[in-house]
Image (cartoon, rainbow, N blue to C red; front, side):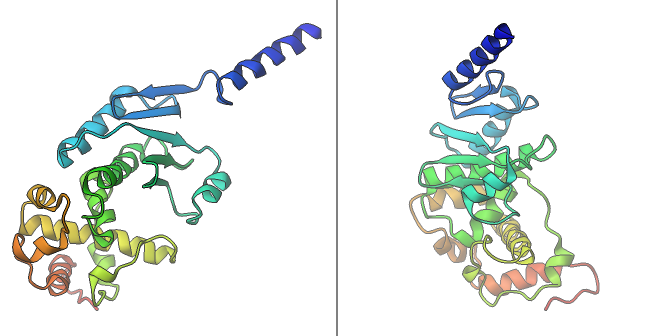
Length: 239
């Protein structure tokens, strides 16, 4: 009995020395990220492949960041305070990524890639990328899903897309619409001009100013409405 108690005490002591993390927790370190407590199915090669894709597209070597895994949904929601729909967040103030418990093998690549775009936006572009476009850009570059143009066409088009608020804090429908509309905007812009070059021009400046000059989109709202109508299923008229 005393031997069992001694073993348990020793295990707890080792866990305490490890900062409260189970000693068998997987730790991943690359030049760009430090990821303690990673699940067994996350590999260094996989993480580096995602990082390389995002860095190459945005032409930026990420200044090393911390990536944290939250294993309890209630704790994660309390941490970010943005509601139950959030899968992961990136924090501008300390350049960290926080992954929630609903990040699994099937969606890790897309979600992690999406958050890395936000990190590079913080580090390289500062505030050059407008908020109404940033979520769509992150989805587009990370290949995190496709736009449902039928669903997008069924909703009223905003009178001014530049006034679209940050997606969190609204209804679930509002959140989904923002992500789709923002990604559709990026797809439209990428069709009209070289998106990579637009991003180069935007470093340290306001991207919005180049949409009319470099991309030749004099009226963003009219162009967006036409884009949705063109990509909506036959017979569907947008509101």
